[in-house]
Length: 316
Image (cartoon, rainbow, N blue to C red; front, side):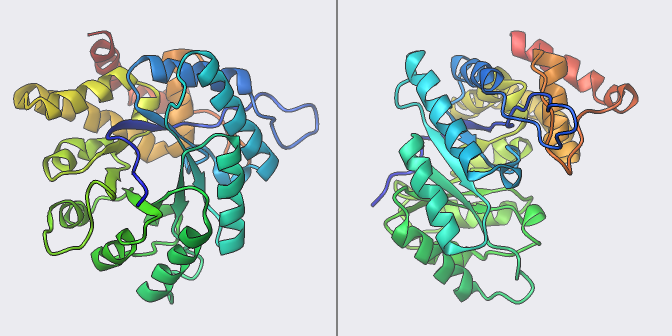
């Protein structure tokens, strides 16, 4: 049975792009800035990185981009002394063969796990058995252990039931899930049920929403794959540590600040995450179309208060 990623706080890192040449629509990868940001996260307590997820604009990258980015980050982490640092590579394709192909070269480039988005194109008519069969086929042929990525907002509101997760958790190459939605009931069912056959040493659940971190850890979740931590890594890691140490009053106070700050990433997605990184950390990045870079000063103003609170927390 495959082992899941270690518990803790992971970051779904944005993919950094530099300015495109004149009249070229697609900005190229900025691997230098990508490395600087990755090392900043590793140095500030982040347990591992998710590359090429939804925050990483995965659907806008070619397979060559994907291979280049994973291999470069693995090389630079190793060079900086972070050998075997956890890297999870995302996929967002609909076909079994394409998904397996991406997982194959992700392993060759240095990733240790794959995060496989549920196939949502036929969400209105797909059955739970169809989802089970699709993930089983991917897992059967994947050279990497995989986590199920349940993010209805970017996959046509596809629904995965608790029993579907339970069935898939028995597969020796499926070792966890990222749940990016507000259904805490599903977290609780997966983490607490003694009826389900899943082994929690083999199958770990992570929330994709840092505003849920306290309740998710309380019911036995493994941690978070959280976009706000791309901007404020020490703060989200500290929240995790406070909860694990049972320092409830401090944890509740910090959770409230984090929950408000998460609205920047939830409400503005990749654009909000990159804007926060630019304004707080100083690393700039283009986006690939159809996304357009940047938030106006007026739009940013509504976040200045909580960003200031988070900056103070980051220093403490």
